[in-house]
Image (cartoon, rainbow, N blue to C red; front, side, top):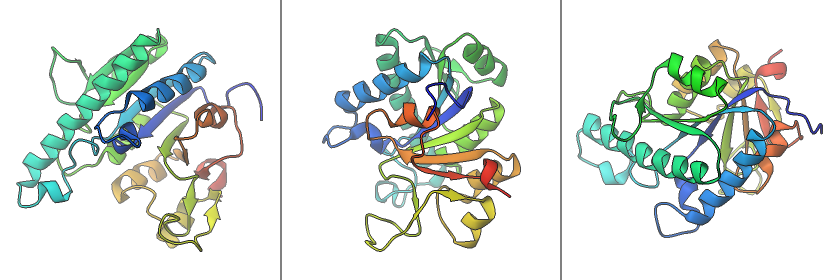
Length: 243
């Protein structure tokens, strides 16, 4: 493992549930502290970081809570939940002394800047962490798809998917004790083995644009930095593995 970063620009995808941690609350200050500590170490290496965070800790369009609701209305509520999480994370990053901007796919100028590709690229070049909120701005698309889209738009070297498991397995390791860990995969192997690492639209975007996806356990302190420095942790799809 090199102390130098192997990536210059990354898109980090986090689930909304990750912000809650073990807390009964929607957002855990303990989790925010760990996340921003890890981010600070990465930013200090000069790596440009964009972040997409879900809203599942507050509301998810495709959930039991949304049963019998109009899908468009439910998805709009989910988008607003991502804005709440993005503002919370942005505030925690700012309190670390790290420059940060929150950009929203849906205009709400008194809360955050509206997203444009030009603005996002400028903020990244200025050394700011950029948090993308509001999904794609459209119903029927997940935050996985938003992450893939923003990663492609910002020219990221990799899409880092921070989860609560160590990487990709042949089955859900939380439900199947016989699940096999898969450290390196091509896009075709993911498809042939029907491994659901993200939704199909998001995966298609990554595959079409040859964007590598690195899945790792974000809950372990320091893992983000290790991934950035090239440590052999987690699972990587595409990139040099897509031969």
